[in-house]
Image 1 (cartoon, helix red, strand yellow):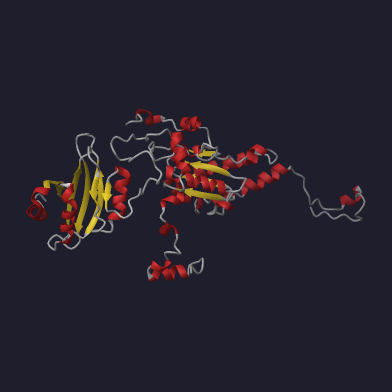
Image 2: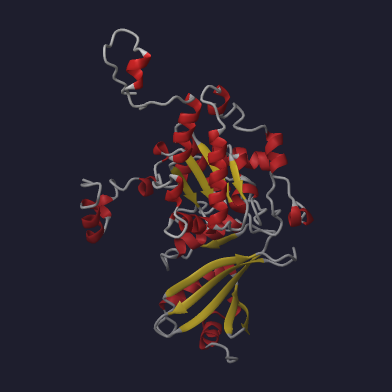
Amino acid sequence: MGLTVPGAGSEPTEAELAGVSPNFLTTRLDAVANWGRANSLWPMPFGTACCAIEFMASAAGRFDLARFGMERMSFSPRQADLLICAGRLPFKLAPIIRRIWDQMPQPKWSISMGACASSGGIFDTYAMVQGIDTIIPVDIYVPGCPPRPEGLIYGITLLQKKIKGESISDPTLRVEHVMDDRGFYLPPQTIDEISEPFGNSVHQTRSA
Amino acid sequence: MTEPSSSVVALRAAFGPAILRDRISCGDTIVWVKKERAHDLLAWLRNTPTQAFNYLTDITAVDYRDPERPLEVVYQLRSLHRKADLRIKVPLDKSGPLEVESVFDLWKGADWLEREVFDMFGVTFTGHPDLRRILMWDSYAEGHPLRKEFPLRGHFTRAEQTRQALAANPEAHYSVAELSIVEAYDELPEDVKRRLAHGERGEVK
């Protein structure tokens, strides 16, 4: 890192090094790469409902996402590395969020913001995806209906913590999941299990 | 308002046996009409100067839980000059084909309204120029969601619903003309052309 040593070509002596200012540091590659990744996330906002209003509030002056390195909202998936799904996802939007996810380059992460994105919320109906984890992989779930900006920011700091624990030498982290020949990204049993009714929804039968 | 609308008297004089019944509910006049004469009657309401219902507020439908009861297509009309409203209901027997004549030729705004009723209730509007689904995607195979026999969570398993949704082509919702602004450019109004020509992306043509 820019270290200039008098009498280059031979090993510097300790006496020579003592006169040079300590303008280099040593670190692990993982630490420095993760430090950069975690603190300059470029979010792709996928706002479909009231959660998007809270997301906008998080990005605006009072809560100021820029403090966490998210100054730049990326409205193009190809220049984004964090997909934030803020709001309910109808089945009609499922192929669209999947295409956006596929267009994002690695490394990439996703946050499912709010009850509807995480579980379908109150919309246990024919039209609604019961959790976006049946469509794309999700790193962080933020509960709430909608979550307050503090909730989202807490989720983002959790994601930063998660990123700082990753290793660039671990090939399993950056695997792209592709559609199998039956048209599924997840086994059908898994999708059915994730989509099971819970809470008040269990009192509604499928024929209700 | 408890007096029946003057339209009811005029309708009974003009269409007699085609009028099934009428009543006032919450101040709104409702007239039930046989489906065979529905289009004639709606055209008459639009074109007769004393009626002049020139604005079609909404078309919707009601499927009642009682299986004996017919499905009703509802037309909410308004006369902008006379500041008068009228609701026309056309019962469709569920044992027969759910078909009624399109009113697209009377009110252009009926286009998407009839597509929505077709999508949600499965009512076919004969003579509609472009009767496609409008809310659900084109390849949606579970039926018509607002019918009472349709289960809340749909007919298929969640896995099958997810698979079919992901297999749908998002662009397939749009007609070619809707997708291609360049081809439609010549038909655009002048002010829109000007705006597009000097947009941030520069010249369209």
